[in-house]
Figure (cartoon, rainbow, N blue to C red):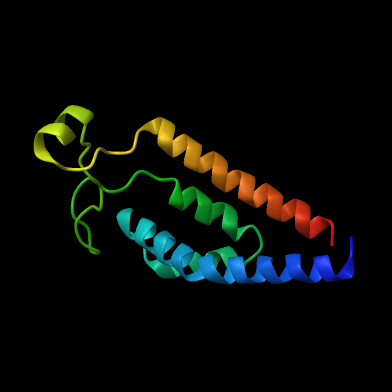
Length: 118
C-alpha cells in the first residue's frame, strides 16, 4: 500500500476510534448500571481476558425494578398503529436493529482490512 494512503487510513482510524471512545464508555457504564454494577467494572477489561467477563456482564438482562443507580432505562414499544394515533415515533423494528448491526460490523471489518494493509 502506498505510504501516503497508509498514513491517511491510519489517521482516519485514529480519529474514528477517539470519536467513539467516550460515548462507548458512557454507554457501557449505563449498561452496567442497568444490572446494578458500577461503571468502574469496565476497568476489568484492562487485565488479560477481563474483556470476556465485561462482555458477559454487558449481555446480562437489566434489573426489573429500581436499583442503587436509579430506575430501569427501558422503553415502551410504540407500534405503527399507536404512532399514527398518538403522534409518537414508532419503535425501531428488529429488522432495523439488525440492519444497523450489519452496518456496524461492516465498518469494523473494513477498518480491520485497512489496518492489516498498512
